[in-house]
Amino acid sequence: MTEQKVKRRVLRRERYRSRSLAVVIALSLVSLGAAYAGTEAVLAALGLTPLLIAPVDALAAVDDPTQPVIAGAAVAVLLGLVAVLVAVAPGRRSRHVIAHDRLAILVDDEVLAGSFGRTARVVAGVPADRVHTTVTPRRVGIAVTPSSGFPVDQPSVAEAARQLATELATTPSVRVGARVSTSGVVGS
Amino acid sequence: MTSTNRFGNRLLLLLVGLVTMAVGAWALLRAYPQWVTLPDVGVEPTPTALWIAAAGALLVIVLSLAWILTRGRGRTHQVVLDPSDDGSVEVDVRVARDLLAAALEAAHDIRSVRVAAYRVGRSPALNVTVVAEPACDLPRLRDDVATAVGQLDQALERRIPVLLHVTSGLRARRAREQRVT
Image (cartoon, rainbow over the protein chains, first blue to last red):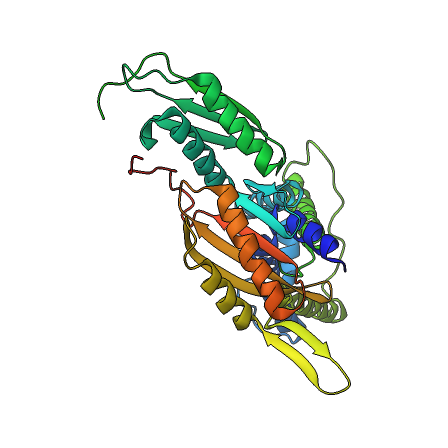
């Protein structure tokens, strides 16, 4: 495989969650059930006393359902539904890819938010706790609360954040929105 | 970065889920014959049928164990493996780890660096996980790591594919900084 191919493959895989844990849990439950059913079948075939219920009685119970059988069947339907949903859900992780010619770069969204927040804080000249940044797959939202008497220039904050977005060239690409609160806060 | 077949995992999970749902729904609907009439199970538990069922259960267990034990493979120790006529060159992942850690020791905004090697396809690739400060300068961090990887390329005299994963270490931590500059 060429380096580019490896990069693309690794990035595609690492942006999505693996189902390994879900599969391990599902298969463990299936194995436990199979082990129990197999044991009962062998005991019945050898004519020994069953552990809990003989296969012939179990089949009869399904044909003429009692309360516990109905409850068990409902639980099975729910577990199956969960497995189907986990299998079908996209399972995207909150991460962004950053363009680079040598490295394949993946950044967690918290780190991306921190980086945009830092840029906004430096341009706005406010303490860090006055900048609130949220990152969603396609948007970066920056909210700045200025200190009273020290106005913050919204266009320059937005411009700096846009420059950072252009420099990072994330996938999926993000649009930047910067808001400056009209009411300032006194102190610090 | 493991070589686990992701599509296979999804397919198997879907299959197990659908079968479980079908069996559960079938047993459940028998309790309400006024809605649907389903045929009886129709299998007499003869000794032959019981042995076949036991063998089937054993097969399911063996296949499940085999599937479980083959998850998460692909990790390797060798980042370079060059067999040639007169001996072979092997470079352990620890070499890459030490070189990168040394190069990034003085870098800003980096708390720690983890390096692991995986085989992707046939060739080795590096997974470099950087735990960054909450409010880091991403472009500078990116360039610092790229420089460090460039030095690694020179030392190893070849380019190994590198995945850089930048994380904050703590998932739920809010990006905050107490220092005012």
